[in-house]
Length: 347
Image (cartoon, rainbow, N blue to C red; front, side, top):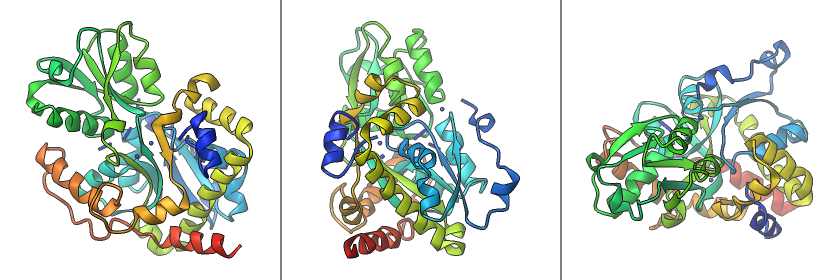
């Protein structure tokens, strides 16, 4: 169900305006094991994250001991495969995960009881559909082989773009591959186009003659990225959830105050150079606390999470990624961002 929602240069500009940007292969083998001390912690949160600029700040939080400063112990689990992180949350093997709204809706439609408590970012171009030389429009994809991670964020983006161009899912030969493998298959000439997110976009665009057909910037608000918890954990440990939300905003403050050290950590986690990482600047918009508060409000466009979730749910059912539209009444819980905002305002 879904590996998948202002980075540097602009990130440091965006950071100056209160934020920075930093919106997958058998990761089960990549999940860090807990130490006995971690397992016995009374303040533990098991958090999953994977390769996306909007989630890399969690690495900064860990390395700069920001979690500890908020009185929470975090078992931070890296997943090479985004889909695996979602499945691991659904299975209850972690307490929280970093994932997109459409992937969370898909999980809920499959029976998972998950809750969005924080907006990390919106993808504003770092999710891309990339095509080989000779394919110059979305219509040119008809009859072609297109790879993406099935049921995840860039499969969703692909279907959005195809629908806009008047193509049906059956008009292409869809090749389901984990995101990293999809990028590799495209570079090797095994498929004609691919749907990937940063940093895999950098890899895919190394194919000579390749080009971006469209990206998440063409569908504003369609790919928001979130901190998502299992409902049972929230009910049992709301104090730990609050600590995680507090730690996120403290991390953004740290990045703003320490840009050079932060970008080194972010680029290392992304496995790219600092200069390559800066190229993702415009593709992810990290949300401020004010933007979080606004996103959780009811509305009539994609800037409202409630509205966006309803539209996505209809679309996911229409294209066959979910069998039926789930009940989304309890999907969002804004009490933690509200509590952080109140504390920040009182300082």
